[in-house]
Image 1 (cartoon, one colour):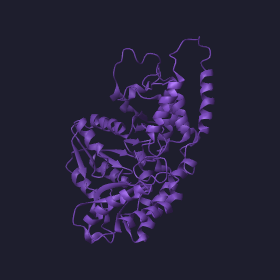
Image 2 (cartoon, helix red, strand yellow):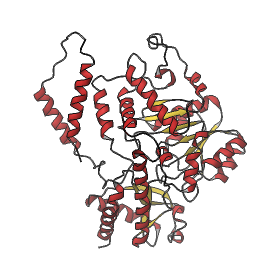
Image 3 (cartoon, helix red, strand yellow):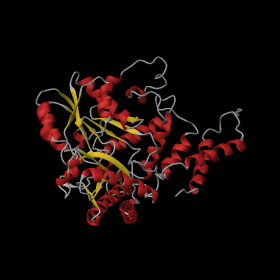
Length: 450
């Protein structure tokens, strides 16, 4: 689980980094008592064991994926310098690495001429995208699916943009009829299309949203914070594949490298198709941007100080695992997708559980087979706790009952929502652990009926 051999690689890299500054005159730095340092670090390690095993395949709950070893090492190495990617003064090398890494992400979506940068995560990235949208379409509404991430409504409030939630269909995707009904009023400035909702991994019908955008004149922002990297996967459904193939037509895109991109928190990325939106960021700083005539990333970002270590980690990861179809990185995404499909089938065949619609990415939601959805909700909570006692960590979610409208539970709905179990199978190793997961889940189910 934890490979100490990585530390030997880090030690070599630290020596190499130090050699790059050997011409500097000696100076006295703040000394650290190594004995006390060891004591505190070991105490820290002890405290960190009070965690769920996010790195293990038996953790199949929330969207938590361990960073790749190369990302951990590159991040740690960069922290010996602690660069700041706001201005080139603070992060000369890592600013260049950020531009290269972001260009590789943009190229994955088919863009070569764009504006973009890293940020603290999907929330900040979406804030920037909606901020730009609000500047370009003032006094216009933001529309997003009712299954879109809750931050869109909250961000719109921060930006003082009016927000409207669009109904979703029985598979968790934006309902096109409801969107068109709202767009006809002429109040739509921006529509947020989610490619991989955080609850179910559902993919909004992007091609049709673009068609409505052309008809009614609204911008399309794609929130692909969770699902963006599936652009590289070869085993998607036809509708999901078509959505990802059309993503380059978006006005802006958000993706989170700290989700499927194997990065430490926090590392988000925002991209704009039109580089001219950079003018909206224009501001004066009498001391920050004069060290170079090259672009300072702070000139195209709402955030000021940003960790250069995040850029170093992302750059190193993409050098080791290029963002190409058919590559090692893409195969990891495909393995998670296969795990979700296998899990969905095993649940359906078990006779104990009823999954909702077939997953579009790598998230599966399901209920225990019960006579009412109230009983299913109660059983979900019991199984959640029982599975944790057996070392299997799932998640629970409150979702619309109609997500089970095409299953044998369709006639049992007496409430609008139901508490269900949810598994995020985003680690490649999940594919080999599905049988163990389903066995422990069945045992937890048995515990609740005895």
